Structures are given as C-alpha cells and as structure tokens.
Image (tube, rainbow, N blue to C red):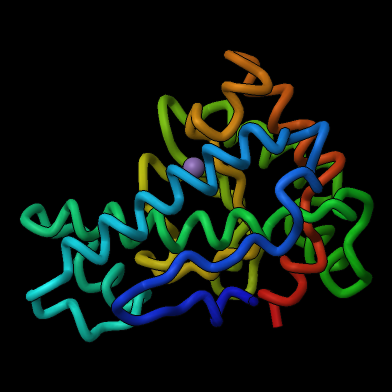
Length: 206
Ligand code: MN
C-alpha cells in the first residue's frame, strides 16, 4: 500500500498491520502496538465514521476529507480524526521488521543530492522528531523535486500543503511511552537505525 493507495470511503475501515504485532520487537513492543494500533488508530477511524455520518463528507474518500477540512475551524474534529487515520496507516508502513540499513540506489542518490549523506538525512529526521514540542510527526517529504524533512503538530499532515510524504515517525507519547517512557530520542534513533522502511519511501517517490 503506497502513499497514493491509503484511501478509503465511508464506512472507513482500519487497514490491517503489514506485519505481526510483535514483529517490531524489541524496538516497538507488541504491548505498544496493541494500544497504538488496536486502540488509538482504531479510535480515529471509528470517530471519523461517527463524525461524517449525515454530513456532506460521508461520500468523500479519506484524502479528500482531509484536504477539504484542513484549516477550517468548524471542521477540526473531522480533520483531526481523518488525518490521524491516514497518518497512522502511513506510519505503520514507514517501518518494517526488515527496515534500517541503506535505501536502494535511486533513493540514495536523491537523499545525497538533498542532504549530502544518508546519515545527514537521518540526523535531520531525528532532530525534527526531537524538536516537535508536544504531539506530532516528523516526515521525509518530496517538495517539488527536492527531498526535505518537516515536522507537523498534532494531526497535521504535509499532503495539505502540497508536499508528498515518503516516510513518517509518530512522536506522540502514545507511540513510545510504554517502551521508552520519556526517552523520545532513544525511540526515534532505534526506529531510524532498525525499522525505517526505505523501500516504502522509494515506492512513494515513484
Ligand atoms: Mn499515534
């Protein structure tokens, strides 16, 4: 399921995880996945279905709901739940039990053209993840023909500002607190070293 395929219509469903709930252990435990996927992500999808019922958004696909409600003060609840439904499906796919290591050549060249080295790109992602005050996300995106690292707060997602997400890291406390307590940096660095799914990023680049 690439970037363009994270799409659904009402009633929106919770897409299955692309691996077993213990597949990311020990970086992310099955206990964390149980709450994060089974309660938080499911909650966003369930809330979205309740919120769009009987509204003009009920027949719209997920991405359209996100772009149509972004920045509209009276549609915040729908935006938050729709964006979080999308963000989490994207996040699960941004990691793989076989992740980490080096990207394939084309993506690697693109990373080197934008950041100098792969390590510099990972460092910028880690810095963005740490610098996000409170809840939010760190993203590797394609902006025009350049790769960039951006961070967003709460449910915000770069698709509303014309950028194409390639990878994301969830830095809401629910993503790491059971395993790392307050040590966000340890969670972020472990994800970047051991789980980050460069193959998914390369697929999204295409
Ligand atoms: Mn989350």
